[in-house]
Image (cartoon, rainbow, N blue to C red; front, side):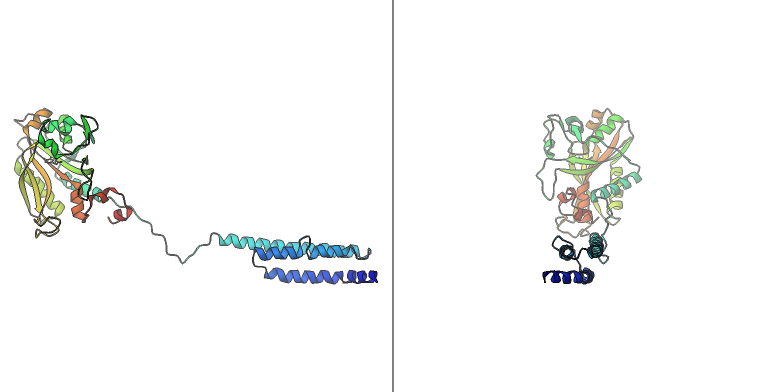
Length: 348
Ligand code: DAH
């Protein structure tokens, strides 16, 4: 009897092979992911899977039928391996395609074009106006010596005027320039009159940092020396500058002042362009804004640089660029000019 059962088993092996083939073919279609594919592999191709089981049964088949059945089983195994590999490849390429997927509905990325710093824009405008009036650009070192920064500008060693400027000293005689005026000295040392230059540059002061003052800022210095230069020319030059820069409607006034390197000295005010002179917070309700210091070059300065004080006359002026830029663009804290915050810079 036992034999008969086995015979029946072997008879049905062909059918069994067909059933396994059909179920594998239909199941592979519903495999959608790697875990599904792995279950399929375990069910059919693993050591305890359907095919291995059929090979086990082959051993019980009559010897005469084994070659044919064996061939069929080998074919079954190959075809199931093939559909398995095809599925594996198609699932793989599906996930490959997913990785760099692009969402075409996303808004585009904005590209920012750089802009010029507000200080640069202000400096360029000042430069353009003075170049138009026949001035040349000059420059000098930011690390200066006491002689050029103070002494040759007629600040005597114990003169209280030295206290006007808090200085960063590097050594006793070397310092960070506190103003652009020392370049006046360097220009006159290196050339004979006539001299007509503006000197834009950075200056440094050891002041408490606040919204109104920073340890570095910018100035534009001016110097015009020739024979017979008058105070009217000083006024004419600066009024022409102010009208080009601040607008033709502004009014101006010159107030007497003091600087060691000019005599007489003055400060120039213009009507506040924010309130048109009516009075506001920025002009401290005076209606006026101080925009620069100026004066006729002191004869003592000519002696320091080897010019003849009897035959030379000239004027000088100096203005703070940061203050001008702040007024112009409505900036209320000087520190923001030096922080390189892109959110601030993008606005210009
Ligand atoms: N150097 C002065 C300062 O930093 C500004 C100044 C005033 C410059 C009068 C000048 C001038 O050339 O004539 O405060």
